Image 1 (cartoon, protein in one colour):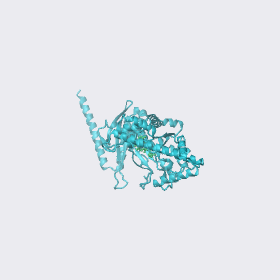
Image 2 (tube, rainbow, N blue to C red):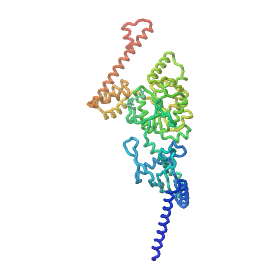
Image 3 (spheres, protein in one colour):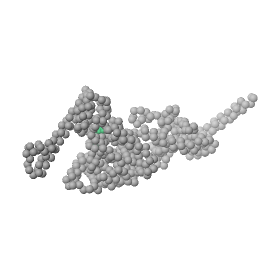
Image 4 (cartoon, protein in one colour):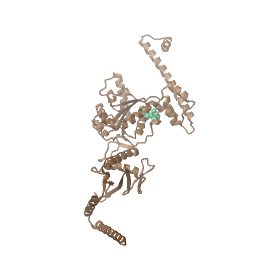
Length: 500
Ligand SMILES: Nc1ncnc2c1ncn2[C@@H]1O[C@H](COP(=O)(O)OP(=O)(O)OP(=O)(O)O)[C@@H](O)[C@H]1O
Ligand SMILES: [Mg+2]
């Protein structure tokens, strides 16, 4: 009976002294052995331990072959662990979040967290190896960071298959949700003269427009939202039908009807980046293709005012002399206004290739949006279905649109003056931009009613103007008709014709 504790004590003593000797040897090796020998020792200790251990380890390194780009798997795991570890990890690091207002927590180096998947327990550790060699003496030490996943070998199949797939998918989704969206432009500006040079420069995309704040018929709004959401969820569908995962939208209508605002609302709805492509700044078709290749998925590529961006009418039927000359003049004026010398060599066929050529399929999940005030000026080839799949007309403000703006700007759902506004809106055309401008308080003393009166006044003025224009047009027509008839019309005869 006495023997057991003494045997136990002996066993503990032996184990203790073995560990102590091992640590002593390890300390000597660390202190005095050259780096290569240390690595050699570590390698063989690992091999022996792995042989007896029932656990499997998988490392996911931050950089693999290409030192310039972080591995996608690492980035996804990082996002997954940041979202899941902050509740369980004991040592966390804090970094500034996307809107620079909050701190984002993630697991600190060498911290270990546990995760569970279908009843299997796994462990994640954030770790790093510090490289002994430095490229230059004044360079900081090179750290190679990685995550190590450990699990029991009985779960091998499930963890290497379903679990890792789940982690990467979740991580990617978290990144999309948390990422800071960007607004890119290809306008010429300062570019880094190095291998890092990209053709797009960007700022943070912060436009606050949403479909909720847009003045639009409710049915139309619903249809557009459904179309966009369906597109964003149709990866498998596009793959099945053998079509690149992209969709073209043509937004057309008079100035101030919300085309640019809708692009921002689309980006905010789908959480996409925006690439605002200035066609006149693109040298030629090759540069256009390069720009396309540099865009990422989950983005909207926008070409605003496509009708006056370039002379893309190469294949269009020739117009009559005067109309053609007017068009040319207008286009020239626009180019001069925008300070563009107009020496871009992008052609219609280059642009068509950009939209649906072979290269357009790279990346996937992209919207291409054109806006124009003059849809009739565009080449039919450019806007045919399949290229511009959905044509959306944005038009003058209706009463439903006004109600959205009144709610946004004045927090009003109803008001006795609404009936008068409804009546006037049926008679005159007013753009949402003009309505919005009138509903905007101009001084701190302006209340909702004052803003509504300001809108009524604007509508009445517009009505008077429209009536005066209509009268002038009728009078002009009468004069032209009478001149065509060869005779000079008396005042009575003119009045008769006008009343007809
Ligand atoms: N449908 C709308 N809903 C809400 N606000 C609108 C709408 N249309 C225009 N606005 C307001 O008017 C301003 C101008 O609109 P926007 O720039 O979107 O017009 P646009 O159609 O792009 O004009 P343009 O053809 O001149 O480029 C916006 O800042 C927005 O506040
Ligand atoms: Mg616009």
